[in-house]
Length: 400
Image (cartoon, rainbow, N blue to C red; front, side, top):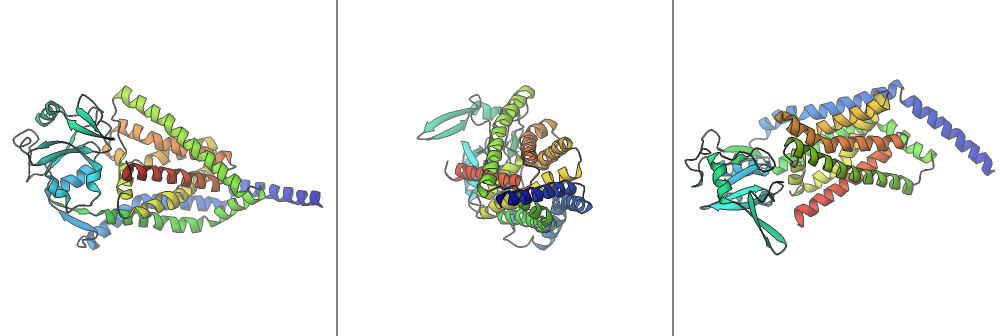
């Protein structure tokens, strides 16, 4: 009796293996893969179109846009600039998001003005630029007076990590040290503006991903059902699937360590600034906002499903040579995560910023390949990795 059941199971396994191979050349599947790529391309282009609509329809709504004075705009810019030097009256934080001040470290004073650098700045521990004092469990940093004077006079233009120093100083409230210096240039100083609120940024990012994810999942329903069924045919228990996904997460963290060492070596060798990516800065801002749950849902649930369907299932389905599929999908996966760095035109920065994401794409592609090109396991691994990363980021942001 049991021998007969084994024969039936083997027959079905062979049928599913044949079906899986057919799916790779099946015109219907090819159409799904192409549609997924087009949807993701739309995800890259849609923000431009939506931005025009938002500017027209939502500009006058305070919940989405906030009119800020020159000092407040300087603060907003500094929060989003890991290489910034902000000199501003601290009273101007009162009307801004309460989380903003936690992203900046005071490193000096000039009259009633406080001098800040970004909390994620990698150069803060450099002893040539900063003095540090341990108070309890926390270090306080002070930008050396001689260094500050040289920066203001234009003798020092780069931070110790070789990144350009970006000034964020309001035109109508210049500190005594800056007044009359080379930095005191009305063209370069910050002026009043209208800025999108944290609420708009969070809702915009979540809605944009959801707009793409819903049709993509509907279109990819045959793929998802097929791969789930293949797991059943292969007698893969929930525990086994989670274990394989967990191994994938370990691969990711191991890869991160290796790539981190490589990035450090390249940055040192070619004097490329070692800094937090713009993508990570944006994520940190969202996680510290009241709308952090939208960021978590996007990063942990929606994002992994969309990205695995596109960069693994679709790329591998459309490119016949799986090695080329692995290389190309990894490169594209890496580059789409550093669009801000690409726009700067700094090739060195693009290389070091993209390497962690390219490595991540490569590892997820490898996980996909070693698991018989079943998309379920890399999706779960991607979700698990992002969840741990988000929790670690929140721990650093809220606890430390």
